[in-house]
Structure formats: C-alpha cells, structure tokens
Length: 74
Image (cartoon, rainbow, N blue to C red):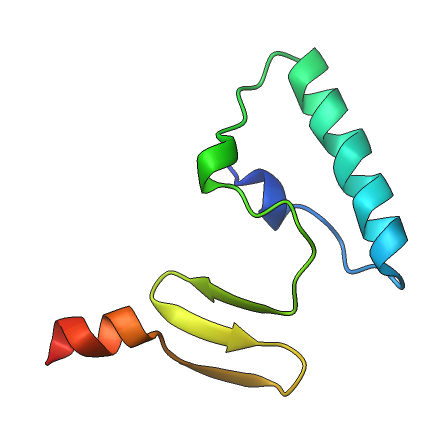
C-alpha cells in the first residue's frame, strides 16, 4: 500500500497545528526511507481542492466534477 502523504494528516483545529503535524510527518517518513513525491503532494493546508477529477469544497460541504472532468466528458 502506498498512501499519499497528504492523505494521512488528521483534521486539526488550526492551520499552525496542521503545519506542525505535516512537518513532523514529512521528517519521520524521510528518516524511515520513504520517498515523497513533492510534485504530486498537497502539503499546504487547504479547504478547497481538486482530487481525482472532483472539485471539493469542505467549507461549504460541496463536491462537483472539476472543470477538466466536465470538458473531458464533452
């Protein structure tokens, strides 16, 4: 199993706690010999993102197809 590093972070109360958790996790994974593909990772805390062809807005509880997905269908 190869999880994405940004998929293992727990929801945190503040942006600062997310960043601290992220930094500690990245350091640990690197020390253990894991390779982190930074180009494919989302290491900046965000509440709106595109993932697997879906636009996800956690602030408003909305999920919809991304613009690229809609254009590919048409």
